[in-house]
Amino acid sequence: MNSMIKKIFLPSVSLLFKRLGIALVLLTITRLLFWWMNWAYFTEVSPLDFILGLRFDASVIAYTCSVFIVLSLLPFGFEKYKTYRIIQTVFFFLPVGICVFMNLADIEYFKFIFRRTTFDVIRFFSSPESDGWRLMWQFTRDFWYVGVLFVLLMFFAYWWYKRISLAYVFQLENWKVKSVWLLIVSGLLILAGRGGLQLTPISLVDAGFGTNPKKIPLVLNTPFSVMITAFQQNHKPVFYFSSRAASEQYFSLAYDVKPAQVNFKGRNVVVLILESFGREYIGYYNKKGGYTPFLDSLLQHSYVFPNSFANGKQSIDAVPAIISGLPAMMQDPFTYSVYSGNRIPSLALYFKNQGYVTQFFHGGNNGTMGFEAFCEFAGVDEYYGKDEYSDVERDYDGNWGIFDEPYLKYCAKMLSKNDKPFLSLIFSLSSHHPYTIPKQYQGRFPKGTYEIHESIGYADYALREFFTEAKKKPWFNNTLFVITADHTAQSQVPFYQNGMGIYAAPIAFYDPQQKLKGVDSTVVQHIDLFPTLIAMTGGSVHGKFFGRNAFDKGVQHDVINYNYGLYYYYNTKDSLQVIFDGDKVWGVYDYPKDSAMKVNKEDQLKPWLKSNTPVFKAKIQAYYQNMEENTLDFEMK
Image 1 (cartoon, rainbow, N blue to C red):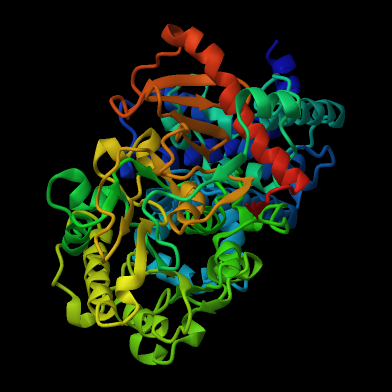
Image 2: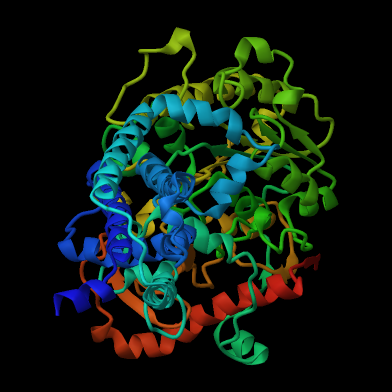
């Protein structure tokens, strides 16, 4: 009996599974480290979350170690050659090392985007036009411990690998039996790679089965996230209904923008996009100390929408949302997607039609984040980046671009050169990692609990200096200022860590003439700025808009965001947040009362879901259908 078992369960097969066990342990360790270093975000974690993660780890191992597995089971006795064993070792440690490093790197990067890294991030770091390669050293220096952990883990893995290997004594095995094992393991590879026997291979959204959708990043691993999104570059229209039924019965992009009651026709418009200024950092929104004393005072004299949201978690999502009203409803940012060549409406095109000059200011390297290319495509007349700035050597922060204080003063100066009304978008950058502050200001602003807090204080000071300069200019009193942020960043307050909270960015309007001042509880988002600014400047337009005029009380101002294959739909009328994967509902939560998404009301709200699910299905269909058919447009009435 023992001899029969030995004939069937070959030593080389046993050795293979032991080695693969090393990879599985490494991925589990990195998941534990990921959880430990981000424990404030992942509350109420259970062992089941880590067990569910094994499914995705096995999938990654099946894909990345497939060559090593085949080399281990070829029935030709090549293992007796040292060169062959070295090749085997290389094909084990190279993919496993990459997977371990990706997981470790996301321990810190998760704090910025609240999800695992996807392929668009890899594309950014590998693009010659981006800041990726130059910033890689900065990230490596700031998060040096990631490199130390990587070396320790790989040293441990190599020690374990050698110990297992030394216990293995090569012997020529029955090639027929080994061939059968090759077929069996190949089948297991396919099964593990696709994540089971279900009809379709597992994807990002499958990480939410059996756990709270908020814990999807914990269940997933980074290499799986990158691989899946690398092969999901093509998007097809989603049809739940006929086009006519969708638009007539549930939701239509067609929308008439009418002049707002407070008319700013002919006024200049300056849109201030503040890097990473989540509402959490701004004392005005939280009735307690924040890091923005100047902005707090400015908002006291502004028209503020306290229930305001970004439409993405990255800067590259914010610019299309603000300029063209395009929500981030794909895994890829719009500028990297297959639809990036589409004809798109934009604020720039509208204001140019009104006789304005349109400008975009960002003190970063020209080409970063695709801002310059998108602005040109969207019809922006003038782009001002680091290349156009004259005192780079003096004011360069050594990482992203020009420090906020001198750059915002430069913007105020450049706006004075306009000889006709202008629409100018100004994007700050100092409150971006690595949060560099000029030497003369170090220690001046509160340190807070995260590195970003001090840089938020500096950026707020730079904003104060901008307004100090702007007030001296003849154009100041004739200008409407829009204050927002591109996205949120690290969070320590539970309310801002969950559901809609991770998108909570400011949106407010400041009028130096004080014709517009107050607080409006209407829920607004970045994509609403497109129709809202048209309405505020007296425009009358018919077109297709994803957003709605913030001052139009006759429409429902709902919010929809997309993350990890899930749509987060906030029905503002009933204060309910729905999580939807495009096919079925994952949960219904009372927002903002239950921002942590602890109580799923899906079973209690079956009738409500039956009548409302078609609405958010129609919104998803409208997005993809119009992207695919390239039919977004608007016309003057």
